[in-house]
Amino acid sequence: MKSKKSYPKEVYLNGSWLKPQKAQVSVFDRGFMLGDGIYEVSPFYKGKAFKLKEHLQRLQYCLDEISLDFNAFSLEKIIFEALERAKLSTEDCAVYMQVTRGAAPRTHYYPENVTPTVLLYVNPVKLEGFEKKSWKVSATKDLRWHRCDIKSISLLANIRANEEAISNGFDENLLIRNGWFTEGSHSSIFFVKQGTLFTHPEGHNILSGITRQVVLDLAREIDLKVKEEKVHLDELVEVEEVFLTGTTTQIMKVDSISYKDKEVFTTKKDEITRKLQEIFVKATRG
Image (cartoon, rainbow, N blue to C red; front, side, top):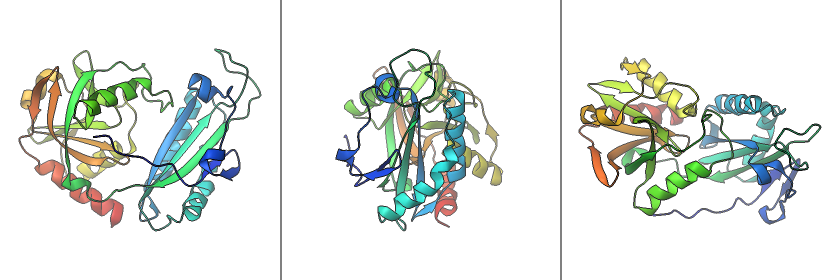
């Protein structure tokens, strides 16, 4: 089922606070015309930032990778102002940040002397209770470009994959390249085999998930064996648990995976997933 989303009451756009219906960009903005921009989402638990530095570092990395000259950390003050203005300083919420190259005559190369377009807003989100849920997911061929480590606003391939899942009654779509799982359409994937945690290694085929790294750190803290190695579709017969991670997904247990209209995985255990959920809650709300 598709959940209903609402617009924020106010957005920050290029130095001004505006009602959404008043916020406008040029039709020649390269984000609008070419998808030439980067975005980031950072969570707040009861108004307290969680891994904000890491989210801003990832934003900066992505901006640098596409040679977009902007200081991601200049947004920090604006982020906290956004929470105050939205009266969300003590609530669960998520901040959305987007930087495009700005407005310029359309070219396939980077124009010079262009002022970036900066958008930021905050919305309330429900972050409590994720550990009481579980998802049924599908799997499909990964059709995205070869720089998935860049958090680009060009998300059409991800959108198509997620729409395919949601329209067929699933909660997420896992992506596969040459038989190997990479990540979800908007999540990172973890597998448990014989008590060992597996996840796809860092690189151009996955986004460097902030929550993914938190889970890896927590797993090592409790002496859980971890391997940053990819898992093949054929290996699902050996898999006991699967869970997904993400900024607002947090740690989501997977009940089943379907591929080509056939169920190829059903969860056998959930002890490790539950343990990681438990310590993640303590880490975010302790």
